[in-house]
Image (cartoon, rainbow, N blue to C red):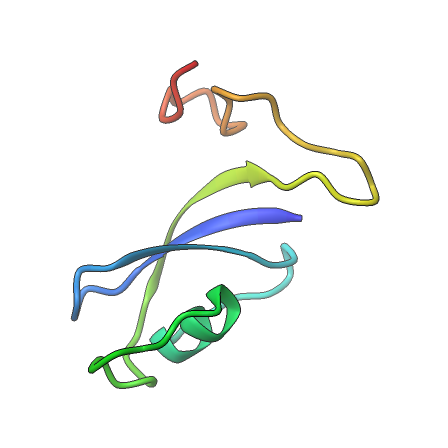
Length: 79
């Protein structure tokens, strides 16, 4: 399953979560729920932005990207 990072500009937090490619998380509350963390003092309806895909988690489908490759050739995850 793809992994994504979401940033909340209100609190400056960056959170990594897994979800299908068709899903789109738009609020801090959705990101926190998916990540299994408490939202803290930031209102749940605070907007977030997706920052970058950070690869795939191996699962029953067995897929995944090798370390050091985000799939975009940007070098954001060095070996």
